[in-house]
Image (cartoon, rainbow, N blue to C red):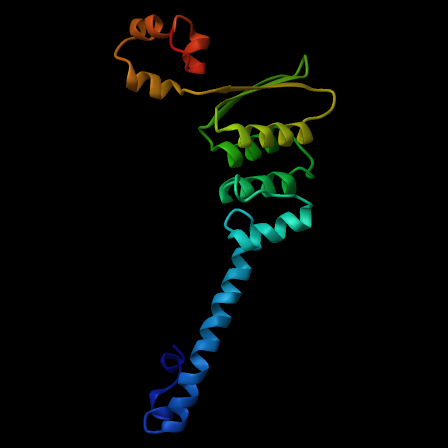
Length: 183
C-alpha cells in the first residue's frame, strides 16, 4: 500500500492526503501487477496464456488452445526459439533436459557412424510431434537419428512387479516391457 511507503506524519491528520492516497492506490496496484505480468511474459517458460499467445504470434505458430495445454504451448515456443542456436552435444543435452527433464530421457551417440538414438518415456502425441520437429531442426543434416519412446520406466516396473520372472511372464520380451504391452 502507498500509505506503508510514506511517513505517517505527512498524512495522518490530513483528510485530503488520505483521500488522494486511497484514490491512487488501485491505479498503483494495477500498474504493479501489469509490470509484473509483462516481466513474466518475456520468458516463455513462466508466461501465462496472454504471453504465450504473443510469442506464438511472433513465431508464426497457430495454436489450438482447445486441444493444446499451456505447458505444451510453452514447450513449443521454447523449442522454436532454441532451434536457431549453434548446436553441440552439450547443447543437445541442455535442450532435451529442458524438454523432458534430466531423468526423462537417454541418448546414445555413435560419432563414427554419425548416429544418434534418443530414448524417452512417452509424453503424449502432441509432445512427440514437437520433439521430432525440434530434434530435426537441431541435428546436423549428415547425422542419422532415431527417437524411441517407451511407456514405462524401469523404476515403475521395479515398483509394480515383485520379481524379474513375473515381469518376463507378464510381457514376454524386454521390448514389450518398455512399450507396456502385456501378453
